[in-house]
Length: 142
Image (cartoon, rainbow, N blue to C red; front, top):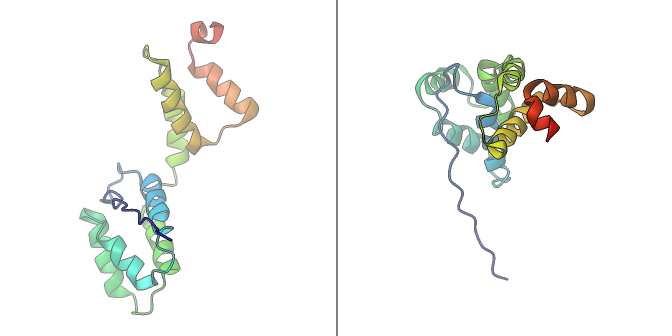
């Protein structure tokens, strides 16, 4: 049996700045790691360090210096998330969804709406209400 190996690009680096979205970066990390199920905790932590830059890399180095050698992947992930997860991201995304404006391209508008709604998780009546708030009346009438 001939098996094709996938060549995946590494996720983009994460710099740790407040303006850099952590959740979408982290999801790309988890997706990538799913292709390497047999990697060890040490290998995963070392690989993550190659994807960190700036403040995030400084955090990683400090964290590794202060932790014992037996650190697990689960503990590393918990500390990384505690440090960088934006607990306001859902609220900020709801605000962005409310401010989204239609600019003559319905496909682009709906793609952006859908992408923002993935994070806000509006469903059923609340989704319909949000759609009615942000879509121009002329589009609804169409």
